[in-house]
Image (cartoon, rainbow, N blue to C red; front, side, top):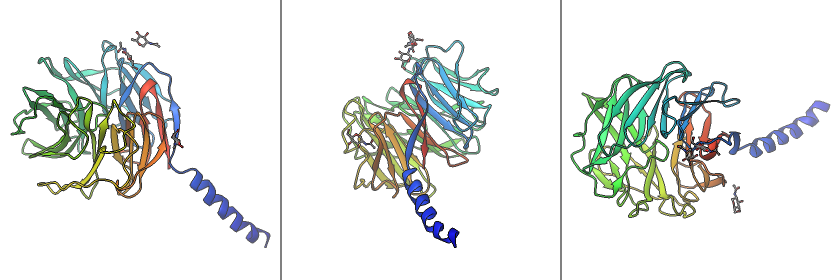
Length: 339
Ligand SMILES: *[C@@H]1O[C@H](CO)[C@@H](O)[C@H](O)[C@H]1NC(C)=O
Ligand SMILES: *[C@@H]1O[C@H](CO)[C@@H](O)[C@H](O)[C@H]1NC(C)=O
Ligand SMILES: *[C@@H]1O[C@H](CO)[C@@H](O)[C@H](O)[C@H]1NC(C)=O
């Protein structure tokens, strides 16, 4: 009898605790001399982050502890993207010249060059991989032509193909290297990668078979789409805005369903609360996005966004095989979303 009386009380307490514990961001590490923009969450235990000053962070215990390392000989480079395949194997991509991608197979102790291009004007922006080890990297346009290379073997070998895109970008249009998430690989068939990328600057477009202008902030060097996320229903969410006016909460997000041809964009009812550099699906309908002015969550596929933190983060990613969601940003800040 006694127990019975307590059950409703316990139940209510559980409900309260559960609702209290929702969508809280917990800092795990910070106070480092690096700005982190690359993040790759392999599973609920293994997380890699990459950033400026040649810095890499790795956790194999779900973020309880991070191992920090500086890639020898690359202390001045800014690793804007990382793709990790397991606790030992990862690729890192440095922006600026010369373009470089390094790979480790021993948890970051040694790194080998798997891609180098010293062409003047090279500036890699982001990589994306599927779970078969197929990957793509995109770089800023040279002579208005986007740079595209792909790999079929987890980045061991890269094939440059700058003729995939028939169209050219306009002068002043390029890709943001703000979170390593402005490109999504759809497939590679007959040595041809199919992908969706988003550009920004003077003009902001979805870059695919066709180029389609995005109804998002554009026209200035600091404006445009920064990140694209896609789920298994081919529902896509693009975020961006103006990083020099990061509290502006309109023209910073669009939604569409990708059917392979024409794109019909729609806008959220409540937009993310400021410029956002990264967006990621957490479940089929739940999303997270982040930027220098905070973090938002949507529970309905991006139609309504709720600000859950005013903290600045550059990148947010969900585990490829798991549920954990991590964020990373300035001063070596790494955090976890408590759902
Ligand atoms: C950050 O790193 C740079 C280059 O390695 C160095 O010059 C600078 O003094 C460092 N700053 C701090 C606060 O440690
Ligand atoms: C080190 O990183 C900070 C950003 O966190 C940056 O301001 C500084 O320029 C970097 N130094 C070098 C040498 O890359
Ligand atoms: C963010 O900051 C605003 C203004 O200071 C405040 O009203 C709001 O409660 C904060 N939101 C969160 C989620 O911390």
